[in-house]
Length: 585
Image (cartoon, rainbow, N blue to C red; front, side):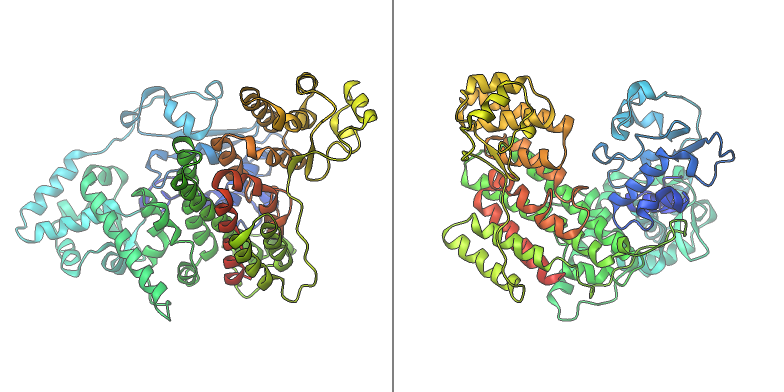
């Protein structure tokens, strides 16, 4: 697997699609047609865990597989990311080799070990001679261009452009996306061989450097940054024009559609700018390209990652109660919810999970029918009714209007229960108390844990309840600590929340997530944000309606939203549900 702009494999999406395609479909039966970067990663991870399924294995009785990522330091848009590791759990018969330029990185491989999420004891570092960059060739090319007089700087401009792009690029894309003009390309074509030889044009007419060494020697960081900034500005200007126009389907440069998001990520674009790539206008533009679903959802993932990072940073550095800080967190939460819902809705419209399919068929890009219903109308209405039920005043009235629109024609819709800690009629049941003191697990005691209610033990003192909680494990430990949170002093409350968090990480399941959500009012902001970002739209929610009202759905996670962004976060989530529902019904 060569990682290089000259092969078009430096961007995470391109790399994942090619790497997935190297495996037989039977290796990835769960994802015969991956629709998102996350599904592509999961497919590759599953295939590596089951090495015996790979088509290149010569001996099915004793399978072996060698995977080489050559030049992973040339990855262009932030991968590999330790939060999304997909090469960290290979099967016993698999070996993975990653090559990087030793001179450009710290010795010992620690940087790449961390980014790949590898354990130090499971990897070895091998130093070997390599064909490094050839500064003499680049210097010779510069001298040859310098001897051309006025045409030299014109041709050099094309070299700079090719050092900045993330894949081979056509003449038309150089003109429309990168900002090169015809006189500069013509100057390149007339350049002497000493310079012209560093650039090749493939059979499809796309330009690229002859090799990565030449590209690296030519690239000047300031010029590359300036060209990438120009690409981003050009793309956003065109996108905003398309958004404002009644007919947004103008002819777009293929390169600009495919790589605008990657260039924005490389130039550390802000969350607001990246959210423009999770819009109806940008989806309409992508729909005219092959691989539109994976491409658009990759851009949505970039926006979600940026919003996640901004939220986590705000939680670590901002004030809990300052109005401006709360509003900022609420805005980031709305962006997170928007990205998750858009991905869920589009995957529902693609619908390949519901179709019978031969898992061994070759990989083809999934297509999405935007007219296909998501099947989430009732779940959307239930989510809005539920959020309206926990609001008051003008905020409640606003969400009720959205809920009324969503409920039209669906019959009676009632609110879903939201996880919380409270006193219950069974809280002082002597038999329940006797069983708890005798060592029974809380899930074995009738009435102690309802579907979305952790019951406060009013007949057991906080001190005794703490002692009993420490003797429990797993979900029972979570329930025990969660139930006494309201009655603990502040210093003990923080420790109790940490106990609940630790038990969840060790034994987390769907019910455990509900218990954790019930603890939201007492969680640290950073912990609440981490749980929400990790769980929203993950594997708990296999279908789009569940993302709204099912296990790990928005209604169940709403206590975390309120903890982080107050009622404004609940209104923002409701607005996202309503708006995405109108856009992608």
